[in-house]
Each structure stands twice: as structure tokens, then as C-alpha cells.
Amino acid sequence: MKKIVLLRHGESVWNKENRFTGWTDVDLSEKGVAEAVKAGETLRKEGFHFGCAYTSYLKRAVKTLDVVLDKMDRDWIPVTKTWRLNEKHYGTLQGLNKRETAEKYGDEQVHIWRRSYDVAPAPLAEDDPRNPRLDSRYAGIPDAELPRTESLRDTVARTMPYWECEILPALARYDQVLVVAHGNSLRGIIKSLKGISDEAISEFNLPTAVPYVFEFDEGLGYVKDYFLGDPAEIAKLMEAVANQAQGAKGPAGV
Image 1 (cartoon, rainbow, N blue to C red):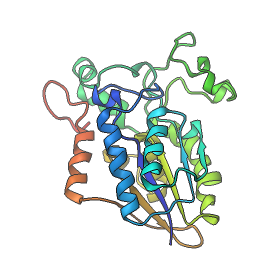
Image 2 (image 1 turned 45 degrees about the vertical axis):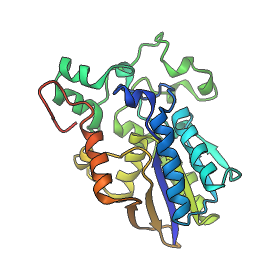
Image 3 (image 1 turned 45 degrees about the horizontal axis):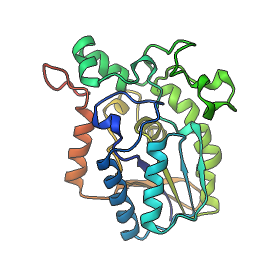
Image 4 (image 1 turned 135 degrees about the horizontal axis):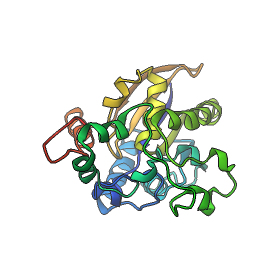
């Protein structure tokens, strides 16, 4: 059976501070490094031997991958970095505290910005220093392809062609592939693979650094998926992600 493991990066500094991160290049927290170590040890214990790996241009994903491969003694495998696996771009929300934003705009509006399929936050201005067109790592990418903001639909539109043309075909050469990316770029892939509706995907929350295994047959057809780890613990981690933007009045399912 062919397998692709999807892994959201470990907790970042801005995850810890409960900020909208998007394309902002923040580092892992100490907890995030520990989560990556645990993920690598789990994958090694479960007998995974990845032939190649993919990650984004953002250091929280890159460093998570580095730690995982080190713990698995697979540092030598080929790794491909691509901006198409970057997190959803949160536009002008990037850097804002999620809870404070919920208190200002309301839980429902923040839930729409975070979890709706086709609503994007306000875009960055062209002269905003956070605009990716001003970042040297994206210098080789046509300006028209660089987002100033994104909905999940937009994220899927840039991620899935790369999945279909590069990542999934890698299973023809390797039996196991590792993808370390971000909550929303991975949610978009999961939505497409499992046929999750636009409405239902808003309720799917991906915890940090918990390996999510997808199995495929020899024809590269999707067979089944499952998380590695204790189901009760994973459910609690998912709930914690859902409650990140909880406003002053209590939970609102965000």
C-alpha cells in the first residue's frame, strides 16, 4: 500500500500568541520543536521509511520537517520546497491576535475569516511591507500569482495542481511520501481527497504535528486515512484549534 503522510508544522511562536500568521515567516516555539520531535519518533516507531518529502517556504514547516527527518534518520532523502504549500494568506489580519479580533468584530465574522471556504480577509496594500511581492524568496514567481489575501478556495486553487502534478505522482517512484505544511494548505488537500463539502470543511480542525496518514492503491486511488496517536488526545487537540479565536463571551465554534 502506498502512503502519504500529511503533517502540520509544530506550534509556532504566533500560534502560541494566538495570532493570525499566514505567510508571515515566524519560528517554532519550544513546544513546537518538542511536537516535531514526538512526530518524528512516532513515525519511526510505526516503521515509516519516506523516499522523499515536500514542504513550504516558511520556516515553521521547514524546521518541523528537519526535526522529523533527523529523528527518523532520514535527513538524506530529497526534499522539495514550494510556495504552493504555504499557509493561506490572511491579508491584513496577519499579526493580529485572534481573540482580540473576535472581541472587535464578533466571533461569527472571525469564524468566517478563519474557516469559511470562499470568504477572504481584506487584502494587503501594494506598498504594505508584508506584501509577498516585496519578499526576495518569491522573486521568481509572477506577481499575478502572489496573493495579497486568500480564501480557502484560493488556497486550494494554488495547492491542488501541485499535489496532482508533483506530490501524488511521486508515489510511482516511492512507496511513502511526507508532506509538512500548514493548517489550511493541508485542509485544502484533505477536502479534495475526501470530497468534504464546502460547508463541512469549516468544522475540520487540524492539530499541530500529528501525523495524518493517507493510503493509496497501486493505481494511486485513495483508499483510507487515519491519524497516528491516541484518538482521545487528538480530539482534544482538534478542539483546542477550534477554540483559538474564542471571544470574550465564550466559545463560538471558531
